[in-house]
Image 1 (cartoon, rainbow over the protein chains, first blue to last red):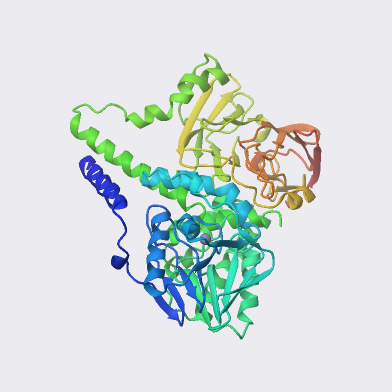
Image 2 (spheres, rainbow over the protein chains, first blue to last red):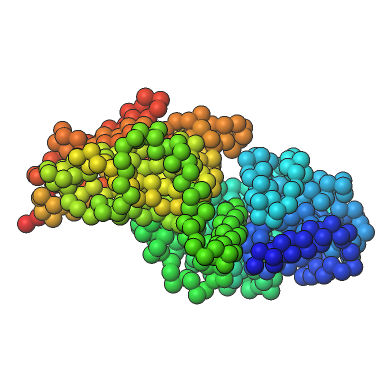
Amino acid sequence: MMLLISLFSVFETRASTTPLDCKKVTPAVEIQSGIFVRPSHNGILFKDENIANIGFIVGDKAIAVIDTGGSIDEGKRLICQIKQQSNLPIRYVINTHVHPDHTMGNSAFKAENTTFIGHKNLTHAVGILSKTYLRRYNEVTGKNVSDKTIITSYTSVINKLNIDLGNRTLTLTAVQKAHTNNDLLVFDNKTKTLWMSDLLFHKHIPVIGKSGSVNGWLELIKRLKKNKIIKNFIPGHGPLQINWDDASNNQTRYLTLLRDEIRKNISTESDLTHAMESIGLNEGSKWQMFSTFHKRNISYIFSELEWE
Amino acid sequence: MKYMNTLLILLSISFYASTFSIALAKTTENPKPSESIVDQNTTWNTLLKAYYFEDKTIIESDELFDFSAPYRAEDGAMVPIEIVAKKPQTEEHYIKSLWIIIDKNPKPLAGKFKFSPLNGKADLSMRIRVDAYSPVRVIAETNENKLYMVSHYVKSSGGCSAPASSDAATALARLGKIRLKTSLLKSFEQPVQTRLAISHPNTSGLQKDQVTTLFIPPHYISKIDVKFEGKTIFSAETDISISENPNFKFYFVPSKAGILTTEITDTKGNKFTQTKKLEATIN
Ligand SMILES: [Zn+2]
């Protein structure tokens, strides 16, 4: 066993020092005209790669990247996937929120002379969290990525911001606390596609961040469900082929159940352990990655609601 | 996905640890107690035991109480723990205090909780911060000055520096609100379950302000006193390892209907109080 591990790590080191051959990188999927997604598979942060749906949108004059993945290597592969499609300049990197599976590839785009854009709370969230993310990434992978690589300054979206890619306008909307306190929605006006990132989980259990709000999240989905303009939706985790009504209903059902049952627990016994052990067990068969995230969701939502 | 990382480290470490013990088992005929268990207790053995208990004897035994804590913390800033006493509190034999110690926290002693025969049973639940992979210990001191300890290893990280669950302004607006609840009183002379919840950020001094990213000064609850009809039934000295919005469950035996009062003191000298009338719902 020991031998296997050391062999494996030697292999890992070699692999990462070999220059990346862009031709060997699997192309991103064009899910709408000019909208490319590098699909993900379910996995554990830092241990697994490609665990979030990330991608890019191509206009007539420029390209915007939407999230950069969980490592610099993932970011570099995304650059390959972009170059496979277009040689237009990568003018913007948009981060949908601070979580490391969406932002740790950022520094791969430093050399591309891009503008980094995020929710107005993103800069602070990065300030508080990103060194911890990187330390854990290094602990887990055995790599030694310097925290000097962290992108620390972002163009803030306070409410809404339009960016022009040439005959294609993206509308970025900073939302209230939902999955985190720094979520950004990206809307492509051309194809009426809403890049929801982690505001929508598809088949993968919805995961709430410590800074998020179940109330805010439910409110947001309720509002989006009334919107008749949006035609396509891109989730942050799970398959890209999506039925919006089903996906949004499922997510709403899960989050509502947790919110209501946790409120009930707080107003009666107020017992976190019992809440984690008893609430929402019937949802187990309905979601992938349930056992990894369900109890933690309860713990976070309990903290949010205990003194609401 | 913020805390997935925690989980991952856990996974990878336990993976390496189990690989290591497999290797060890193969190479040694008489396996010694696992290396990692010795390591886990180093801080306690070399430092903390003497600091808190000098040269007193501590019996490692669950003879007096059960103690449960999650092996893996879902949220290191909010780790629920529970102590269930195995023997009733009597005038002859009772637990007079419970100490909660988290070895690897910046301030290991989370709190010292005092009990008496008035509690009926010395059960106690609360939520603590666990900053790193660490043993969590409960030490019970009896009225005969004997010490008993049960410990669990908890895999957690960043519990003391994790940002608060609500912003400072919201937390300030409800600072010191108290909920004091008791279970239905079915008969006197029976232990009544009491839940004490206080809205307080209990800042540890290790958390950063979300806006300025500067450290927030420590501000936490340091004293708890709960009286029934003027007599203390539950009291504690507490520190930064108690989670934000402290929440305790304990028991006491009312001999009659009466008034339950609580006084909470924090490190800024604020005092918060709450009273509750306890009436029999018995026939
Ligand atoms: Zn996320």
